Image 1: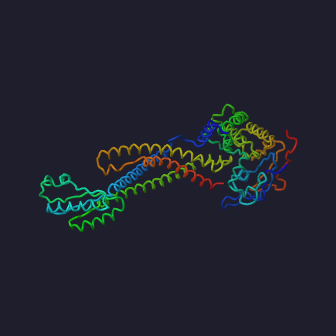
Image 2 (image 1 turned 90 degrees about the vertical axis):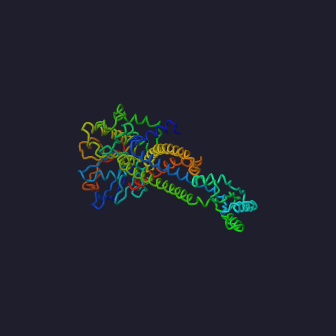
Image 3 (image 1 turned 90 degrees about the horizontal axis):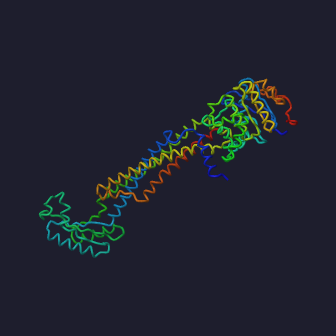
Length: 301
Length: 236
């Protein structure tokens, strides 16, 4: 049975068969750049996916009821009736009137101090949290209920406000997935070209090995080992830089203080998925190299 | 003595050209010493390529070690090639490997453990008189030294057949004589030797060796092409 020293010596001897040291050619650097871009694209896809998920979870069960009435007394009266009606139905988990002062504060950036004067008719608002279930059906039922009380009562699901944004984020997420797939294809193509080039430039060595009785698989193993190592080095380098950049972007997003941007986050599952990318890159490069060399050798006797 | 190599009506054509070898038929006995001779372009190298399985014939039957190798699946060829040692005219040493690693190559290809490689390689280096040149790269070796590394590489796996294509073409007369002594020593150990050459004095040096002569792709005298009986007995 081969000892560890034996195996190490065998591996060293195998490596000597093809000349050139680590990071000697452009391959590791090309793989590093591609891995860097792939990890960034994947991180963007995962982050945007998380943001869409968080946004959906946050908004799916919530709605706002507006009392659009110019007369303050009638408005308050209608708001109280609507609140009582909402609290009495099973579809509503909680219903809370938004304080008029809080509302005016929120409007101040657009309306200035006039928002507090009471001269401007500002609708009364009721925050509604729905019970779990199909929000669209529940909102439709509540719309009928409120319509029976007064035509000035309007209910809007929060999800509807941000639906276009969620759609945009989702589309960007899928775009990122597409970029990852394209980068994987490009990596495979680069490896195929590199393996063909290596096969061509080592033709003399291959002929000698063949003549000594080396099998196609033995020869292909030399190339896949070499290209796999290049891919591992390039992949590690690209991944490390990508992690650094993702960290810096994360800090910037946090600094904005935006709930929406803050939701663009990577949990441990996302990091695990990103960490798999360099390994997948090595596997892809190794298999592509093996396939290319075996195909080329298959054409020779 | 049983035939280790049999050619029956073998023809070889490259592309659409006329046949390089035509109707070549002969058999070689195991343990024999054979010279293949003929003018340049007569087809010696092509015949050797068929013999060491670098080429398939266009027609005919070739049997090696009792098996038809023309129809042999590609996957089985490596096993046959390991039983044949080849000394190329241009040596074909791997330039970035040391003499030691070049000689060790067949053993590594055969999957021998690294710990078992050193003894036979060192023995082989000493046998060809290069005991102190093991770490030298081919470019730093003289033509004769490269030749000896190529021979050591060809024989280290104890092949049943040793094929040498013009092995003395690039060495001086003294080295050529020493080379033949090496081949004879191997032959005494039971290896069948096939040497392509047009060096008649060299052929005369090996007593009991047989000769095949190719002329324009055909064996010059198909009925009596193998001269001298094989030294089946009485070898020392």
